[in-house]
Image (tube, rainbow, N blue to C red; front, side, top):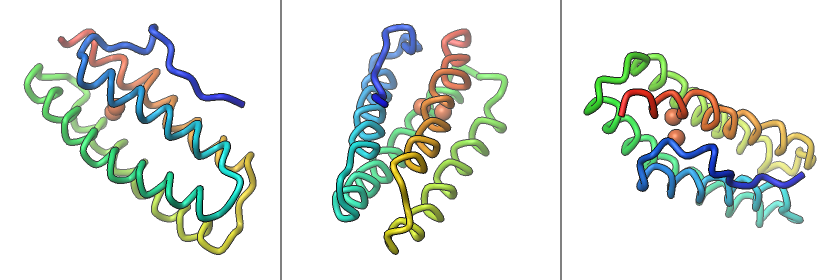
Length: 122
Ligand SMILES: [Fe+2]
Ligand SMILES: [Fe+2]
């Protein structure tokens, strides 16, 4: 399983697209982590990156009056909450590669479905 950026994911804003590329790299690093420590390091990086990314993306959505703004912010909060609760389980070593793939597939799906809708508002 490899998470990879594809040009078709581009929403047409270079800052957001770069952040999405980095997010996908982190998702790929997570799924290929061999140890608990490595995985936790990737998650911490993802968490910091995402908080900044979500703030930038939400600002862009406000500026272009994106119609699904409120629902989208809620989805961001759910992704972060899900990551935090999963991290507690991971810290105890209770995870498999399949769990991480499942978790990050939701994140990538957010980019390829919900974030892509922002393109129409730009
Ligand atoms: Fe995004
Ligand atoms: Fe988003």
